[in-house]
Each structure stands twice: as structure tokens, then as C-alpha cells.
Image (cartoon, rainbow, N blue to C red; front, side, top):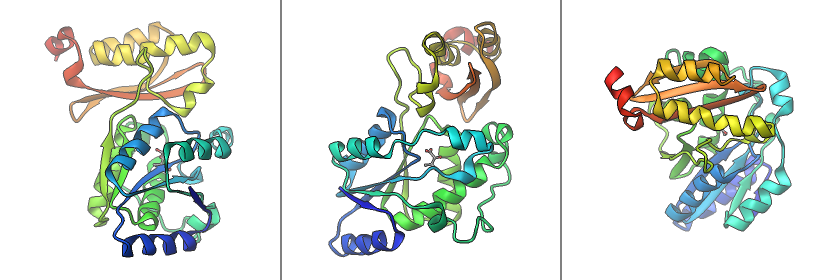
Length: 263
Ligand code: PAF
């Protein structure tokens, strides 16, 4: 596995790959890798000749400095996992390389980025869409892999690629869950023992109750509910538990009969 920490040498490598006729799959990440990321990596490895993973903790998508500072940075362990998985290349750019303009130029989506996550975290999706567009341009991959856990991000990235004629196909990948249903996330490591057990109630409520009932049940169980809402035949939610923010979403078809009757 080759590590690229400057964009120019990656570009040279990609030109060599293209000349050799190799297809490339790209998995953008912020590191702190878990099995959810590895599922994207394995999908990419199975569908492309080469796989590139980027690790960049993107400062522009954090709305609070404390959150950015607290974000886990585990580069050595991440690289070990990617090497073991059979990844060809890792791109680890600096903020100065990715933002030579100091973030004067940015991608702003004016409707769907303003609701749900965007309403709770102002500016979050400006940062996400801007860095994703930059990374897609730099990677120059045939396919890029995004998890369905971040459903709103996935839908906005797909629309971004269409809007800016990005030739990379955006491939959605199913959410990976622990045995009790909790969606894998780098934040789960910050849940204390009892809260880790309680956290499974989030997915249970989203997938088995109506939106109103889920919200009530979660509050009763000690979650702070930021939103539970329905969009695109899915129920999406964000909660806080012991100071840890969790998001998840489920297709509405999987809700139980009582929910179907209520709707
Ligand atoms: O989903 C993430 O990890 C990030 O939002 C992404 C897509 C890597 C952009 O920084």
C-alpha cells in the first residue's frame, strides 16, 4: 500500500493507472476506521482494479471547534487495517493542500442541506460538499463509495455529482450494524458501558414505532431527541445520549404494522 501525502504525486499515479487501463474505486473517510468503513473498502476492492482511501479530518464540516478537536485520530491503526484489507493507496492530504483558497470558494446547496442535519449543524453540509467535490476531482475514480448511515449526506453527494457533471459513479452501501442494531460509527467508542446498551434502543425505536411514538419512547429512555422525521420513504433521526450524538435512518417499509396503520 502506498501512502500519498501530496496531491501531485497521487495525480501522477492516477495518470499511470489510467494509461494502464486500471479502474479505480474511491472511499473518502475521516479516519477512525471501523467495520462500516471496511465494508465500503471491500465493496470497492470487489468492483475495481485499484482502491484509493482518503483520510482527512475535514475542519470545514465541524460546526464546533471542540468537536473537531475531540475527533479521534488513529492514522497508524487505520493504515494497518487498510493494508490488511488489500487497499492499494491511501491519500492523506493536509488542510493547506485541500484549501489553498482558505475556503473562500465553497459549495452551497440551498434547500435540502438546510434541513435535518443541516438545521442542527449550520454550515456542516457546505463543508462536506466542498471537500467531497475536491476529493472526487482529485481521486478521478470510476466509482466512489458512501454509506447509507449518513443518508442525507449520500443524497446530497449524489445530487452534487449530477449538478457538477462529476463523471464518478456514487455507489450507496448499506449501513453496518452491531448485533443489537446500533449503526457503527466512530462516535460509538465514546458511549459509556450502560449508555452503549441503551443506544440500541435508538434503532429499535426508529424501525418498530411510528415517528411520534419513537420520539416519545426515546425521550422516556433518556435520549435527547434532536429530530425524528420522514423523508424519501425513510425515517431519519438524530439523538444525544450522554453527550454523544448518534444519527441513523431506516426504510419505512420495515416499520411494523402499527406504524403502517398509523400512516
Ligand atoms: O462521511 C464522512 O466521513 C465525511 O463526511 C466525508 C464524506 C469523508 C467528507 O469529509
